[in-house]
Amino acid sequence: MLLTPLHTRKIALRFVWGAPGAMIVDGRLIDLRKRGIMPLAGKLRGPGIIHDMAVRVELTYPSLEIRSLQPTMAAFPFAASRVTRGEGCPDRLPDVQRLVGASLRDGWGTALMGVLGGPRGCFHIFTLLRLLGPTAEAAVDREHARRPDHGGAVAGSPMFARSIIMDGMKGAGLQIWLRGVLSDLYYRPDANALPLEEEMEESFEATAELETEMPSMAILAASGRTRRSGADIDSLEAWEVVPQVGELAGLVVVRGYTGEVQKLFARTAGLEPMQHLLFMLAPTLQQCMPSMAEELEVRPRKAEGPHPATDTCHMFRANGPLVESPPAAARGSS
Image (cartoon, rainbow, N blue to C red):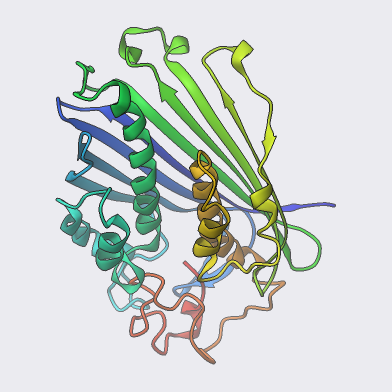
């Protein structure tokens, strides 16, 4: 089957040691739209980078309380304009500072939702920070077991890195195929004193594929596998199929999808990274929709009902400039 590229999303998190009792995490999310010209906020928009957003977070070690948080937006879809009534994507970035003092361990999801969730903030910054919570817990708990008191780690030396790359492709008819790859790299305690090629201690990889049908967003088929390895080529293990991923077939990638994934893995330890990859595939599917605008017969027009992106972010809040009787040319998706 010929698959047409629609969209690629990359999320990267890199953990390094900070001053004693602290660590620094740099996170970045990039969305690359590969197909389709569509009207958005009064202009025709073509393929290219539509989101390039980052955060730098200083955390206490090992309690994971936020000491400082610096979000940035290098690329975003909505700048202040007449169509947006003077509002823009970066407007809510100062609100992120309300998360300073929060812990990534206790009630992180609730705290994040209260500050940035839905119409209160940017969905893409939210997605990046949502992944940060469970990723940091797993990485730091592993490190703390062997280095409980910071252990003289050199500031700036690497601890852990996670990369997730997801591709959306058009299949037959209205099908969208999603392929995701997660790579976790763990570094040796003395990494800063080693040659670069010897710094990695072990790794974990996960891949997942979902075949979905539009516009229902139903999962027709799914598969996934994982692989672990050490620092050298002789330690590379064979791929192992993860049968729980196949059980996603028949579900729908809408609200409640995350909970269904958690149920499938509730009695399985050691596959948390696979869950995180599956969580991240859901918003990637949403980002593929604009590239299917022609097939889905999406046309610029006044709203005939609630916009599909309503309350997903502050720009698309129910009473916001892009949802409340917007000009026809403003219809589109972020």
